[in-house]
Amino acid sequence: MKYFVQLFFLTCISLSTFAQGKKFETSREIGIIGGTSYYIGDLNPSQHFGGPLNLTTGVMYRNNIDRRWSIKGQLLFGRFSASDAASDDPWMRNRNLSFRNDIVEGAIQAELNFIPYQIGNSKYPFSPYLFLGAAFYSHKPQAEFNGQWYELQPLGTEGQETSEGGDSYNLNGLAFPFGAGIRANLFSIMAISLEWGMRKTYTDFLDDVSGVYVSPAVLADESGTLAARLADRSLEREGQFGDNAGQQRGDPGRNDWYSFATVTLSFRIGKLPTTCWNQ
Image (cartoon, rainbow, N blue to C red):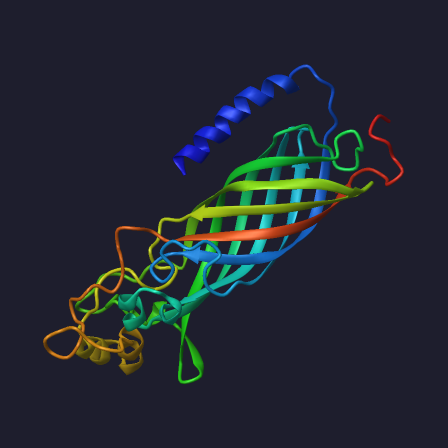
């Protein structure tokens, strides 16, 4: 991420010089968002657009400061999921975990156009852009068992809130979105944007998987039999006592990421459709 941030700010400095002293007009937009989402974590370590691609929807508001800079606020609703059964790694297939996670994100982003752009203005009809921002998200990892979906965080599948574990992980967090897109005018008051971006998080529990297996007897006794069953769904167990207690369940050294790839239809507000930009 640090290289993207460096590129973003170096581009900002260089392109801002072209905007200085030039006449521009501000504009505002509202829009609807559709697309898909996925995550990078213990059940999908590296494959972008890996796993099922689920529907993402949302709304946005954009304030175009000038033809280079915009500030956008948006609210997104998405789902990502993954399954060890789809992996090529024999160890992951044997682990046999799966999950889905519904996420709600509110974000504010700064956007920088590579070339001058203005919605509804035929002189500046399109531009690729970069964005960087901050987001607050809420998530809810779940797993399916016997045809029913259960929320995983209250169960403490890695011993949270038991004598073998620490505190429960947080279901809300701060993320930093960054990415790129391209936008173009469709009509005098309408534009389309294609955008892809990653979210850096500070949690390893978007998938409810991070550390080691704890004793299934402790889990069953202190958190219930459902917690014990969902914590270890291995096809074959490696421990000397017929369970996986103490064995690695996930990789606590890497936090999870999530991503949205979206299409936005936006509409210019604040000017009549017949108003020219030079009026």
